[in-house]
Image: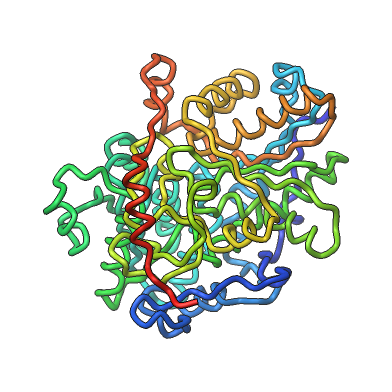
Length: 452
């Protein structure tokens, strides 16, 4: 009775999958923040290298993964697919539950799947400095790791509330050689402006993005690296779903439901897009479920509209599900999911009815995470706990309906650096943070006016 399904390194995917090639309706183009005209490659060159810009705008279905990147991936890829038999027994469900585990990477999450390519392409372009933002620190530690491999100097602006909550994630970034700065900071105009008005501002991913973008845009020797949201980042993550498809075949199973957590959308896209693409090309249809925090519910409460990706309005306008670029989520523990907008491609799929979205509170998610840890031994990251909760809910639905469906979910990372959150939960101190409805209404009212 096999529990782990492991691919040989020789079977690791050689191409990234680009869902744009299979979409029945093309996504809306990003717009220049000044002119509100569609952006061209030249508009993105202050921030990104040409190779990444080409991937951002690509329309071909497959893009080759360069061998030097695959060589680094072999440190941990292919990542395992695991049958959660003990969780099935604990829930008393007839459903089969599988999870694709990305916590085996050196940085402990799925994020190196894009950090390594981004660092490599920048190094190939003779760039020596990168800036970025991070919430919980999964992306920051991954880019720090990737930067260390290719001799890049990495500066990371970490959302203040996570900077304070997760000192060991910061220590990991510094161990890899990166510089980690609490955002908002005094290092940028965007940060100083916020601090002048709110000296104790908890920070947000939108604000940290503003700071990182500002540094890159004002220094010729520096480029910007983004950990989610943009097309090329989602593209890099599709190695997850492609591996999962091969491993599910090894398990003689095929998922009826595919589940992943969503903040900016990269982990969700990585697992789900290859399955959605298969359906769009005439394959069987499945339920594809994005699970988000109820305290930052961009897919379930946000508006599908053009908005800025950052607080200071330095980034292009993209059409996405958004809570408004000025929206500051409360300081709940899933720092990687505290972003006001959803990836345009994920948002586009939601509008087309190809995926669905659910939102859960953090106490619900931590309860599911603790149950999962006690059954399967892996302590999920707070972000990944949302996918666990989604899988538990689906398994219990199967139990109530007497259906033996197959559930596949993405366990995007481990929670070894998040134990303070578990301590709070186990001690009864973790409460469900909620956003201010008036602030949300104000942020949505402030969405930019874009001609139809």
